[in-house]
Image (cartoon, rainbow, N blue to C red; front, side, top):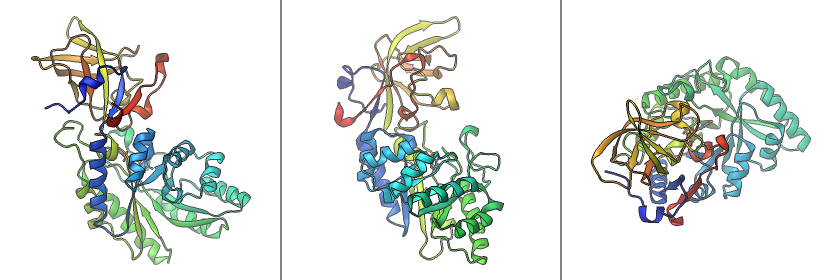
Length: 385
Ligand SMILES: *Cc1c(COP(=O)(O)O)cnc(C)c1O
């Protein structure tokens, strides 16, 4: 089965473009809210970096989610979309002074601090501005995730966060600072994680850290476990909404929260990936010496995930219902890695056919570039077409 696309209305739109199914996005958000409401003190912040299209942000904001930012530009983008600063958290290994100033000036919920050097700069800037910074420490839990090497973030070898053995001394430093309030611990182990055991392993690690801090009478108000829940790239029609119940229940079961503690999540991909599709037009069908190529007008500048992470995206010819054939689907860019899929089964394809590259709502449009002096693709939601 193919996805349901307004093909007639798509014919007049300039390709390539992103198409977002807002009905699916709203259903996904309802599923998140239904599950979250079953647990006391759970709060979800949408990770803006997955997709910052203003129309998408607006729908997510209206569903009541908070926001997770990794740059000053993202803080600005989500405030413009209507997110309350009191629901914004901000992480990043390299925060510039202007970004710290912006976060403090907007009085966001929390800065997730990734080093002692950064903590000292935040104290200095907050003192200058005459305000107080609410901070959490991002701890590197040295927990592996069964995912692509380029998207693991919680291993000792990764650049992110503060080593566990430095946690206590940095909390102590923070407690001596006049313009910084320590409010919690932050973690994020990676992305596209489908094995709930990885999240359970993070819970065990956090339990141990909490026991250690309890013994030292350190009070932790907030635990933020980051994001990382994966989606089913192979079956976007059969599994359009991730298993949020399994995900939140894993944390409810394995993480031992202290009375009054709040648990924060930062989901990106799981919120937006399945509602987005890259629509591209077939330029040529070319018979190579060994195989047939479908050459489309989208390239790695529009969707870089296959080239960057060897990521799989389901590809469909939404203009044809003829017999299935096998093609390599490639873009026009001058790089051998500009390939969307090898040995893809598509209905017999001709010049002009529209091709849908599925599950492209996360880390798609937002990562588009001008490489080869190409245009950035437009993003349309259901209501636009
Ligand atoms: C990227 C990122 C996320 C979101 O990751 P997903 O895999 O898209 O859920 C959450 N928190 C932090 C700190 C991140 O860098």
